[in-house]
Image (cartoon, rainbow over all chains, first blue to last red; front, side, top):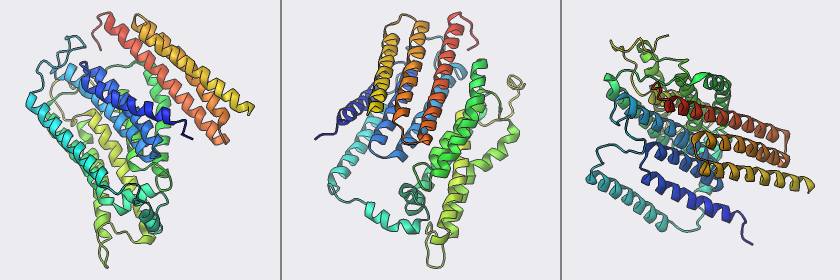
Length: 326
Length: 98
């Protein structure tokens, strides 16, 4: 007997591919972003159907929530702040300068190469084999945590995760360099209903984000999912103007950006010696070390993502600064 | 068994409301009518689906979580509807303060 959910899965798969095509084909950038968000939500559902709740949570929180907010912020920035997109043009317009064919061709070639590589890797792998499940299950007692995904991410292959944290750090450094000269974007006034919503949602988001981090050692969740959810707190505060970044806050912000990467790298190096290599935590302290890394990395991820949403280093500019002060 | 049937009917009726809201979104002439169809029909559809799923839940904790999800999704979609309508009214009147 076939699984009755196969029909649902087929529809889901077709929808995800169709939405991906629609995102690429959309002429209106705003429509493209909305379609991308729907694509992300359906991808998260697909991951959940594939019994990969960790990936589903990450896709929903980072790939859809935070990325969608970043894209919308960028569009607003291009339309109303730098004026690179003519704000008086019809909403259906794309930028006046079309993307050069060379860039399109190079992108297509890279994407094609990656797809080809994935296909070769998939077809070359032993079909229906046991995979690494048995190896991971065997090593679980030494990992210090109960959830295999967390064990892989923060113990067995922790250097991958360290690199991901470094990527975020590099991104925020780049943004703070590039946008140095711009003045503050006047953020839109969203009204009283929004303020009420933010006030109700904020404590709930804090609880959910912390819960995701806390559950990470024994169930789906962890630093990236919790950090992305907590970054939403920053977004709400910035959008409600409850928090206005000021030049004096830069030191604290920089400290929080590097906190996760620094702690992660420090732990990795400090456990070496006595025959151990980097990231080889002593089994009896593994849980403490992993929780320490996860907690600090979560703080860094949340602050970094919120800073990326804000988009520029808060520098003192002579003009238009009093616009924001209340 | 009876509970299963009641839950299934509630979810099915909820799905009908979602379809109705979507048809309204596609067919209605202007943004306010579309928002009206979408927020009202989806709000009711969501409540029915959540109620149906809650009947099938195994424990009180699950019911509580479904209730929380219902509350926050309803709150968020009502706020979104308001924000879209607000933006449409402000920009539609030629009022330029975004």
